[in-house]
Length: 394
Ligand SMILES: [Fe+2]
Image 1 (cartoon, rainbow, N blue to C red):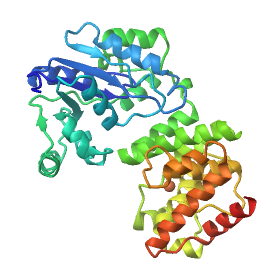
Image 2 (image 1 turned 90 degrees about the vertical axis):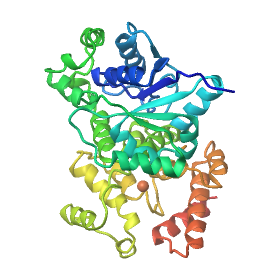
Image 3 (image 1 turned 60 degrees about the horizontal axis):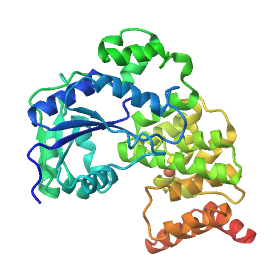
Image 4 (image 1 turned 60 degrees about the vertical axis):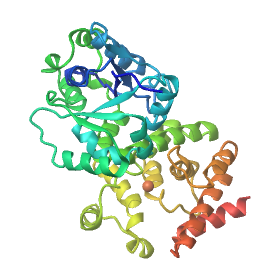
């Protein structure tokens, strides 16, 4: 069936809060791509109630106020009303199935373009929609054109670049300005700004420890790793609720378990020396395991986390231990079965995890053991001890 000549633009994002940069991107896309409409699609939430004291409904309302007076701008609320993160590939599948006559264009920034290939099932997304890249004024994203060329060749992706650019502002910078109480109003659409003031959103006191660490972890990780982290948070919260573990501690431990993933080689070694992280003999030769102990040190020294059980859950989440606390088990298991994991046995293990924490963890760790064996790699002695201890309990 022939698609209509005027595609629909999709502008997704957390919109925390929506600002003039978003609105401008939408205007540019509408005009240059001759779009029929632009649909603003606020993300679903990580499964905690609010970020920075702002609820999903308030984020949605801020978007609605920003776009309601513009012809061709539409608010799509389906994701924000869901629990947890929705992958773009699922959104696009849903939209193309629901509107088979329409064609879709994702409106993205140049920084997102560089990350596209790490999106889940990007090859599939590339078949379902085109991309329209709007750079920010004054920011030259090195490699954007080469990246587009590569994606076109490899995935037959349809990527277009805007002639105009949007203003250089980010929600993160705006939140900092709003906390400081100044300079932010001119960057936010008028009705939205009034709503923020009326409801006293984004006040410094509203930021919890979780929120501020969350911001910092998100900024430090590549998008794919951040999505994994959100999946671990979501799963850890569910497991904690199910097995009577303190939910807030599980949420925080899950958020920071991979915070050191971004450090490798010499840089990781220097940080470990700095924070006096001591590795056992096995881990010294297994750089993949470093981010556990190093993550705990970063959480303690940089993020100010003092709760020893949380720190230990982070420290051992890569290998496990013979005598794990319920919190440590929840984090280790959540890491292995979060929604982004796709290995063969994962569904079976998720099923066990509905009723049996130890049984699910045992199955997941045995699966890791098989995987390591296949690759002729040794397993950490603490992991073997953990499996043994879990087996003894069965
Ligand atoms: Fe990890």
